[in-house]
Image 1 (tube, rainbow, N blue to C red):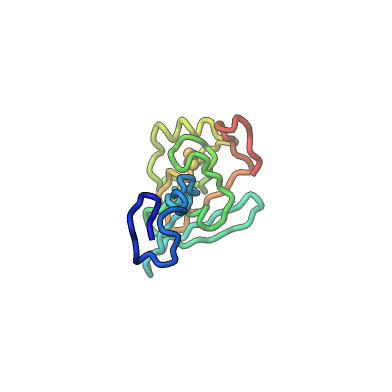
Image 2: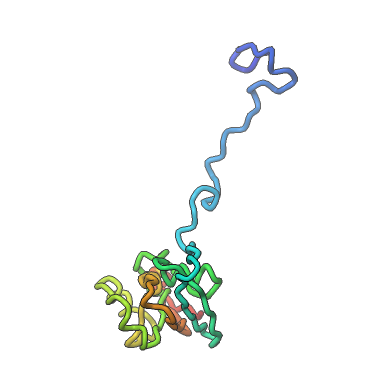
Length: 163
Ligand code: FES
């Protein structure tokens, strides 16, 4: 049995040789080859859980046991909370805006200049506002309570997003 190039393949049996194999698809869905950019969190080790409470815009309190090093955006998305994170956590939007309960605000590292620049654009900015993607969980934040604002401003969409 010969294929289209004229190579004899007697072992090919009844297979249609190499003639009709379709070319590999280059248009693969992104999710098939690239892992999600965010929303992945670690499972805390027993006894090392950091307790974080998110207060949704509806006022529901959602308590999460987090591992050190994860950020609030990833935690919110991994727990199906309504935090957009339009820039994927690269500090280039303000859609991960959270309001931190004042008791824990001082336990956090200071926001850097890039975060402050984005916070200036956040809708409903408060004295204890932070960007969720920039806040990493540490033991010092055990018991942290953060509220998700009623609205966020997505400059990439040039409008307001009611959340
Ligand atoms: S997700 Fe865009 S700044 Fe946090």
